[in-house]
Length: 212
Image (cartoon, rainbow, N blue to C red; front, side):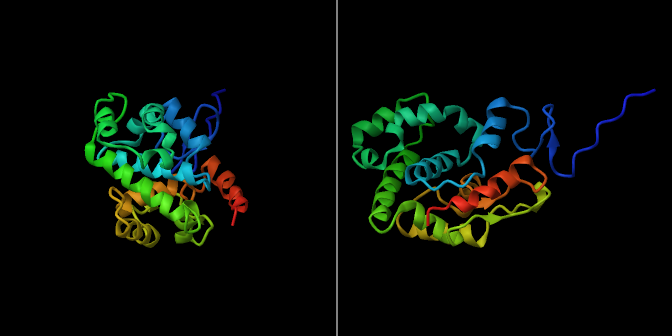
């Protein structure tokens, strides 16, 4: 008697060897799968963590996210744990040192944009909070995408356009609407785990933890 075939996964998601259905984009790379399962799409409310992610998404411009993810610990060491209070004090000597650090993406414009974004983050912290401000573009609660195919996920939305416009008006760079939308997906401002992905419901359940 032939062995029973495993049921096909729902359209859009991939079934992994552990039996879980996941969004297709992490493939089978262990680091990428762990990022998908443990971080991506989970609502992030912390000022410093949101600053870090927005900086790293800016560094991703023109590159793949897995490239940045593999360098993330080197970035954290190079940029003093992404503490805006320290980054605003960076001078030309520090920029030169960063340009010589082979562990990160050595791009002067992006390094200088990080320093500017640190000033913006601190200014917003004095006006009610960096995180609170960014979350205001989705009214403080995650938007549930509920999509079943990667083809249904847009590259940008009205909310990412609005956030991008706001940040650029404050002097930020590398915050175009597509980069900002990727940031919003990663930090759970929008739940774009596919509806049949095992992480969709888990991330949706975290929406109740909003601090405001």
